[in-house]
Image 1: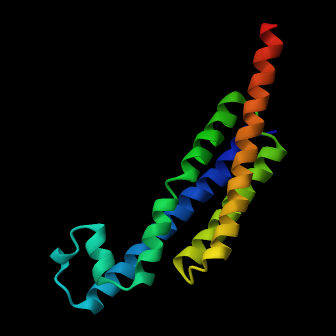
Image 2: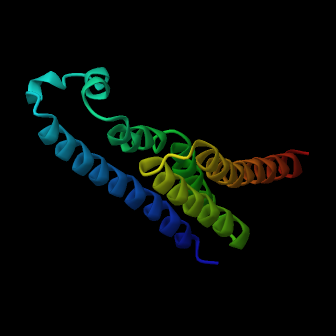
Length: 148
């Protein structure tokens, strides 16, 4: 199997992060103009929350989420590539992670239905924990079979 394939879902996550970032600023700049408050008023995240409608901040909250579990995802993708362990099961799990993080971002940035968002988040997280758990088991098996 071509280990480079693991970079495709990894890049897809990066594109998702970029898309949320652009969406966030499009929403914020529009809302700031409508609010008619001096730009210098928005000096901290708390002041942004204070002066803009709640829905405007959904995408900012989602952007923060994209620097939590996805960091582990990126590290695991690199680990799998470096160790040459990329296989179909890892790729499927990686794509499940990406797909459900995309759905999570869509919900979080728009309607923000909490239970739906949580379910989507959980599916993505379980896919990530599968990758991590399997990688750890494989590493331990290699370690114990070569040292014993």
